[in-house]
Image 1 (cartoon, rainbow, N blue to C red):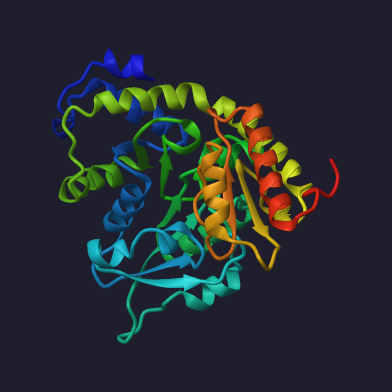
Image 2 (cartoon, helix red, strand yellow; image 1 turned 180 degrees about the vertical axis):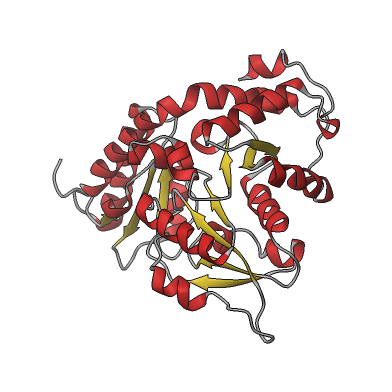
Amino acid sequence: MLEAMVSARVGDDVYEDDPTVKELEALGAEMVGKEASLFVPSGTFGNQLAILTHTRRGDEVIVPESNHIVEHEVGAMAVISGVQLRTLRDDRGRVAIEDLERLYREEDIHHPRTGLICMENAHSSGSVVPLENLEEVYQFARSKGVPVHLDGARIFNAACHLRVGAPEIAQYADSVMFCLSKGLCAPVGSLLAGSKEFIKKARKMRKLMGGGMRQVGYLAAAGLVALKVMPQKLEEDHRKAQTLARQLSRVEGIEVFFDRLDINMVFFRVRRESFSDADFLQFLLQRGIKINPPMKGEYRLVTHYWISYPAIEHTASSIAEFMEKAQGGDGTKSL
């Protein structure tokens, strides 16, 4: 990727004359089965750009309550797009159509307009939403004339798990954002894809949001490597996550959520009354392992191209060592 960045041919992307960006956008659109795509700095930027492009001020956006757009995007849609969210009860990104029907706003002088429905796949819980659920939501949205946006930050991980091509997922959305970073390993960037008309409008809205980045082909070059090389390597990332999950499950006091092990993320909880999160984090850091503090009592570990099997062994054994010292026992159920 660094070699591609150094040798990239660039122009001014604001004027649409950066050849590397144009190549990336054409390839990205093709890989998710859309007419066009647009390079953006981040996944959050891409999601918020989609909301801004699809909606008008005062609209309501229906979105599952656990989705990234609700949980981790700083309420940006209220600031940028002037819309409100109507959160939908969900099960790791899956929704019941009767709940969606109940929350949809019919025309009424007292109601905001339902301007958009958002879904996410793969879901940030580590689960993949079945195609049948995406199709059901999309068909309902079409019957109401409402567009659907898919937060597909990890759409290629979802496709790998489902054993389908990414277009088979993206077909159930009018727009889709996917990250070139994360599992695809690019240092920066995401793509927002949709129809040519949608992307033409989004390009202007991207400028409004400060996303006109001039000679951005230097970053797009890494994105091209990400799209051409990395999707084929995601299955190995998933196998690494399964290996890590199995090893962690042998550690006394560690509860691994195997029902959310669809992609390359391992979620676990520590079942110890005297456990110190701060001591745990510091202990791992001293052994070269960086891990975020728990969220809602859960830790998350993510495997990717740069995580080796020896690193997985080191991580699992280090966690076992800490648990053993904390408990004063052997630290394992069985090895």
